[in-house]
Image 1 (cartoon, rainbow, N blue to C red):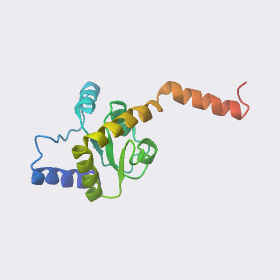
Image 2 (image 1 turned 180 degrees about the horizontal axis):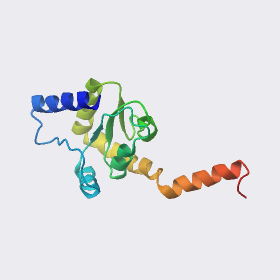
Image 3 (image 1 turned 135 degrees about the vertical axis):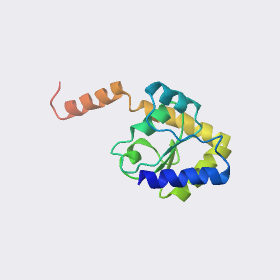
Image 4 (image 1 turned 120 degrees about the horizontal axis):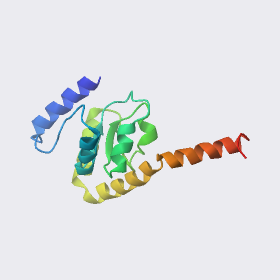
Amino acid sequence: MFTQYYNYLHSLVREMGLQEFVIFKVNISDQELLELYQKSRVVIFCNPEEPFGITPVEAQACGTPVVALEGGGISETVINGRTGFLCRNVDEMVEKLDLLLRDDKLWTWVSENAVAHANSFREEKFIKKFQDYLKALGFLP
């Protein structure tokens, strides 16, 4: 499925003459990934089978909105219309991508929301929530 969307998006980028603005990369270092997130205007996520969706959280932590195919864990990590967009198909992804690229005000708002949302996944917040849960069950004082 990934290959299908990857090939489609590649051809769409060529068709629209956007090769100088869109970069497709796979298997890169953590440092390069961080730099790309920070430089990117939008991250496109095309793996609806992903069980959690760490890639969108990483992108959002850098203030980069996410446009993704909905499904799997992505619905836990992207808030549709607030930290990015969850789309039913590639055509809808293109529409939302275009919207974010053309509307600076919307992009800024989504970017700010994305950072705040990504912070909710920080390790210390997870530990606190888990401890609170265990306390509520009576396992911790």
